[in-house]
Image (cartoon, rainbow, N blue to C red; front, side, top):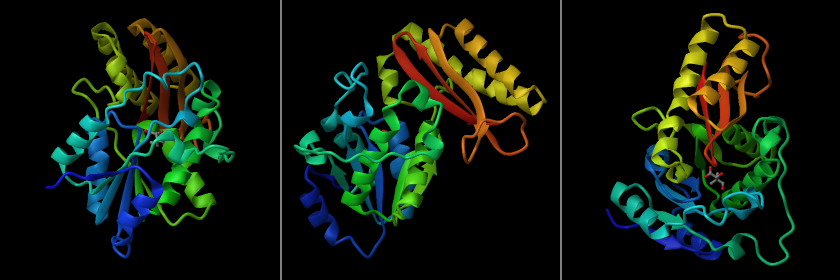
Amino acid sequence: MSAPQIVETIAALRTRLAAARGARIGLVPTMGALHEGHLSLVRETRKRADTVVVSIFVNPAQFAPHEDFDRYPRTLEADAGKLAAAGGTDLIFAPPVGEMYPRGYATTIEVGGPSRGLETDFRPHFFAGVATIVTKLLLAVMPDMATFGEKDYQQLLVVRRLAADLGLATEIVGAAIIRESDGLAMSSRNAYLTPDERRIAGQMNVVLKRLAAKLRNGEPIAVAEADGRRVLLNAGFASVDYVAVRDTKTLEALTSLDRPARILAAAKVGGTRLIDNMAV
Ligand code: PAF
C-alpha cells in the first residue's frame, strides 16, 4: 500500500479530493500522536468510505492558556509512518495554524444541549473550540461520513448535535473505545504518565465497570457516583472532576435507571487529566 500524501492547505485538499467526489469520502479528525485507537477509527472509516482522509491538527482553540497546548505531542512524521503501515488512509490533511485560523479570524461555533455540564464545568472553552474546528474540517473535506471515538463521549454527542443543527451532509459515526490490556482507554495524553501514574490510571476503567455492575444491581445513582469518586481517590487519583451517570443520548442527569445510561468520569492522576466512560 502506498504512503498517504500529506497536504497542508484547504485548496490542495480540495484539488486532491475533486477526483474522489461521487464515491464516498470519510474523514477521521485527529490531533495526531496517533495510537491504536486512532488506527481503529481509520479501519471503521475504511469500511464505509472509498477515500479516507485523516486530519492532523493540534487545535489551539480547544486549549485554555494553562493547558498543555505547547507540550501536546506533535509527531507528524511518525504519524504518517503509522498510517502508511496500517493502510487504509489516502490523504493526510495537516494544516499549519494559520491555514485554519488566518489573521483576523473571528468566528466561533457554540453548541448548547450536550455541551452543558461535565467537561464544560471544568474546561469551559473546550467545546466551542472543538465545534469550531470540526465544522471547519467538515467544510474543508465535505466528507460523506466522519468518525469520532466514543472515548470522548460528550464530544461525540456535541458533534452529532452540531451536524444535525447545521444540516451538514456528513454522517457522524461513533467508534468503540480501544483499551490497553489493563483496560485503560487509549489516549495521546497517556504518554505523559510516569510508570506509577500509569498503574493508577489503569484503575479508572476498573472502577467504572464495578459501578456499572452496582447500578445494574439497584444501587441508587447518587450513592454510586459518590462511591466512584471515593474509590478513585483511594486508588491514587489526585483529584476527581466528576463521576456522573447520564442519559446515553442527551447526557441529562438521571435519578433512576429508567432509560439507557452511561457513566462518565474525569480525574487527574499526577498532572494528567484522564476521561473515560462506560455503558451501564
Ligand atoms: O478528539 C480529538 O482529537 C479532537 O478534539 C478533534 C475532534 C480532532 C478536534 O480537534
